[in-house]
Amino acid sequence: MADPVADELVTGLSRPGGNVTGTTFLGPELVAKRLQLLRGVVPGLSRVAALWHPNAYSERTMTSLLKEAEDAAQTMKIQLQLVPAFNPDDITGAFAAITEQRPEAMIVFPSPMLFSQYSRIATMATDIRLPATGVAREFAEVGGLMSYGVNLSDLSRQTALYVEKILKGAKPAELPVEQPTKFEFVINLKTAKALGLTISDQTQLLADEVIE
Image (cartoon, rainbow, N blue to C red; front, side):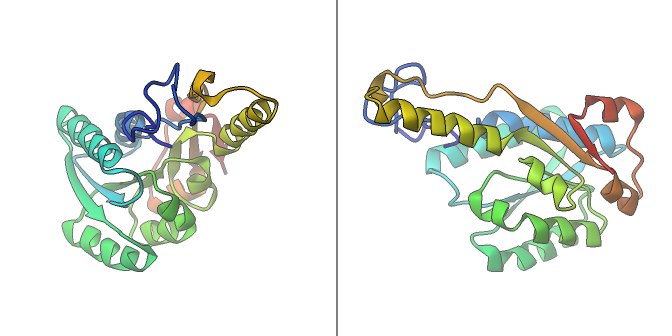
């Protein structure tokens, strides 16, 4: 989950207190970092479209996610255009709305549904020469400009270890909800070239992986 406390699944991360524990990918807190990275590769960035899935998580989590994005955009003096997509069929219309507003970049919010559409979203963004960032390395791997977030494979392995502990008798109430310790910044240079962007050596050095 993005925020199991806000979703009222656990009373606290350190001591869940009930029959639920697991891992969290810290969805809301990473929005500001993604905007900062976008601003680092798009000169004079002032308008960003945010593609989001309103029903991806609980109302509290989504409210927190939107507030984090709006606060970060305001701090960086970036105009944020929130564009919803409730299902895959909405994505074409969402891109039409995005194109109409002529943003300089796009951020894709966390969502299992949007994750499943990463290849399509990355292709559509490149087709309209729109630099875009996702929340997992898979977005950059399928052609998005870049991504920043937790490694989902590592997170799955963490979860599997918890399954083992619980099957061996550990109580979920006493197993802290684990937060990721590793975040990846991945850049796709092939996409950058297609977009006419030059990624500085300094930015490339910040990346955990550069796809050429």
